[in-house]
Image 1 (cartoon, one colour):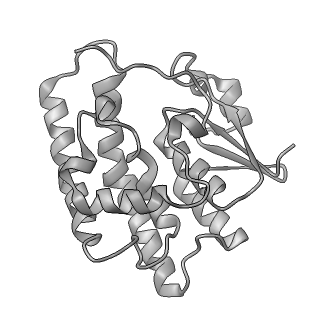
Image 2 (cartoon, one colour):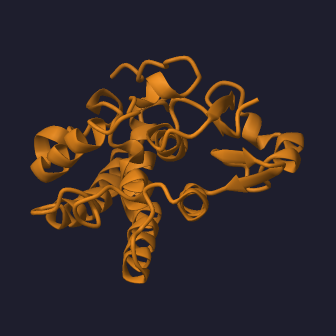
Length: 217
């Protein structure tokens, strides 16, 4: 059995944040498939009781304990392994600041827009989609500006802040309806640097679960 077991599925960018970290850090880990997209297992009371009362993936198993929430997991792993850890108290603050921004705005609006755009059985309300896209465009503009002149979120070296921001960036525009690489050049260059890290893999190559084609439009 691997040292770390990550409960995850291929469509989850929040799970990808942790899976990518584990792989790039060279840690001994294995995935455990969570049938969210077809089976809705995270709504099952027994799954929640055993894994996460919040009903969400990812869940990281390590030494008999379960850890949840991607930002908290990344912080825990950086603290305990030293890999991709912020280098000072000020950098720890900066990493936390960007992780919170990511969870509250950057990932939050983008992931919801992507899910509704690609995976709902029916066409979503255009007004809702316009609202989500507008909120994401405001958030992504902040990150695009921040990465102007920086290699990574905190400077010259990747940290857990980068893995948090990366969660949904490597899913294609066929799912989200937003072409990140075409529209945001500083983020596109940062994505190339992330993809050059040893151990990097795209989400559908790194985590289990069948590929689900986006809803036809």
